[in-house]
Amino acid sequence: MRILLFGPPGVGKGTQADMLFQKYNSTKFSTGDFLRGQISLSSPLGNEVKGYIKRGSLVPDDIIVKLVKKFLSENRDGNIIFDGFPRTMNQALMLEKALREVDMSVDLAIELHLNEEEIMRRLLSRQHCPHCGKIYNNVTDIQENGEICSTCGHTLVKRIDDDESIIKRRIKVYEEETKPLADYYKSKSVYRCIDASGSRDEVFEKISGIINECTDKK
Ligand code: AMP
Image (cartoon, rainbow, N blue to C red; front, side, top):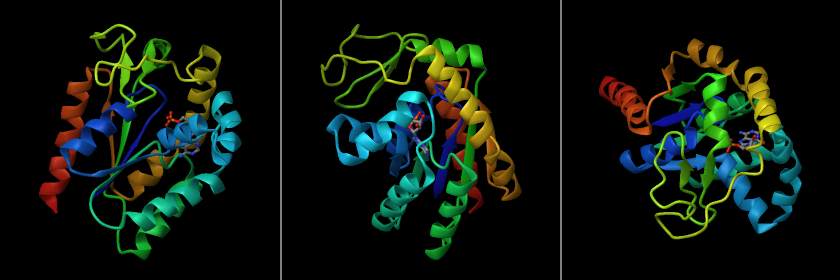
């Protein structure tokens, strides 16, 4: 199955993608994680995209499309969970074309929904482990170990784009560029929307229910 998770920043796409890819024995591709990895390596790609991410703008489609094509050429089989891709109509069309070439299509496009006030609350308190990527949010989780990652012991950090004015810009970019994908995936009959205001386990249960239902129909 090819499953897309989309929704505004802070809605929990990354956390859910991590839980799903373990449960469904899938490959996960998070464009945001990949780009942040390149920034921390100070690679030429990282240096190229850093400014866009810091400003809360989307990275240009041509860069993203190149990355996703490479990923797809290396991952032709099995379940794939896309976290934060596609984010524009152009990216959605490119994905459809690339999947069609290998006789595949998007099976589910799941939009996670959350109001702006809750998004702000979550993102302003979000931290992550720069080593293993685990996400901590002291609004929705109780941090087991203060400022230290409970999985690998590294000191937690904040993302460069989790700043109030940048978060507002990212929400606006989402509304303008990504939200319209809902209509596109509705027209393909693969769109589902869930309320992401519950705990990570509650949201995970809802998403798992949708995936199981879709699997049963196949
Ligand atoms: P995320 O981790 O998904 O919140 O993404 C963080 C940032 O990475 C976004 O605000 C964009 O600047 C960039 N980014 C991630 N995925 C994409 C994408 N599919 N298209 C364009 N920019 C992206």
